[in-house]
Image (cartoon, rainbow, N blue to C red; front, side, top):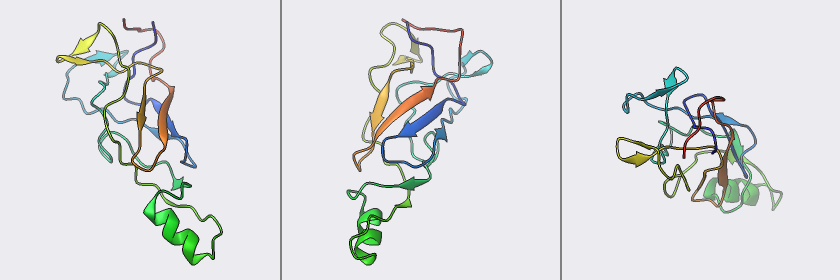
Length: 129
């Protein structure tokens, strides 16, 4: 059983240059170890998933433009993650407001091809099924 994910969880993107911290809005009214618990739907850019510093994938139009301007030398651009769907897989049994709880090991995808992973779930003692 993987740990539940809460506000303050550490995230990374396969094309990002810096880690980021998950923000969970306290709308679910469920806390785990004193912090708001996350669900698989917590994927809003800016509200839940902040930028990962600079983006390095040429499939991002900003990176492609910066790389073109640098005569083909890969040039990172500011990250603006655009998540394509919910986190997966999520908890099999634990739900928060009829939505599966987010657990360590879940991932989500960015439109530009990056895989966003949870490197620290923000909780250490609480697990879900």
